[in-house]
Each structure stands twice: as structure tokens, then as C-alpha cells.
Length: 169
Ligand SMILES: [Zn+2]
Image (cartoon, rainbow, N blue to C red; front, side, top):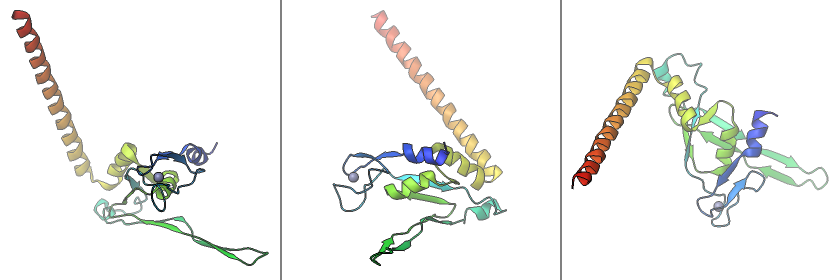
């Protein structure tokens, strides 16, 4: 099966306002508030800046995605016109966009070249950070991990001493 079709079928989310878990088929209308459900904010990364040579210029990349094209459909029999609302998102500098809207999240989750979460963040780093910035980031992360290990060891020492102290009494 097409990955996109599979993702679309598996897509589920939980609303912060009404607590309901829903899929695309359930629709996005919320019972607890006017309009659509509200989701946890999610950041999306647009990975289409590869054509911009200078990585520093990529940080100025503000793409727009047309997720749903607005359409007017005229009923052949009645002549009645149904308008379909368009859905356009504007990414901020560096191709980042955050949203709590389920319709936007649904379409962004399925959109090729758009990623989210940890994998998205890592892909973003590769595309938008210079080698130096990536190196600095890796070094900072390593320093954080080393600090955490030292703290854990110190805590372990304290626990051991505590136990010995009890045993001696
Ligand atoms: Zn809701």
C-alpha cells in the first residue's frame, strides 16, 4: 500500500478541548468549542530549501504550502455552487511552522518534504545548519550527556554512602 494512504488511514489525534480521539473519517469538528478540535502544538519542518546554495540564506526561506486548493463546484442539475475552503500555511524563516489545528496537522503529516518530531528536527539541522553550527550543536549535546552521567554518578555515590551509613548504625 502507498505510504501516504497508509499514514492517512492510521492518522489519529486527541483533542485538548473535548478529550476525544478522532481520525480523519470522524471529522474535525469539536463539541466543546466552536470550529475544529485543538491539538498539542506541533512544529513542522519544510525540507525543500536544498535548491538554495548558501545555508545562511536557507535560514531566510519562508515557503508557503497550499494544502487544500479552494474550489467552486457547480451542481450540474441545480446550478448551486459549493465553495471548498482552501488551506494555506505560511512557514516562518528557516521553514518552520507550528500549529494546533488538526486539519493543518493532518495535511502536514502526509505532505512529502515536510517532517515533524525528533526525525524532523534532525533533518532540519542537516539542511539549515552550517557544518560549524552542526559541530557546535553536537559538542553541546555531548557536554550535556557527560554532565548528566557525572550527576548520575554523584547521585549513585550518595545513595551508596546513605546505605552504608544505615548499615553502620
Ligand atoms: Zn475537540
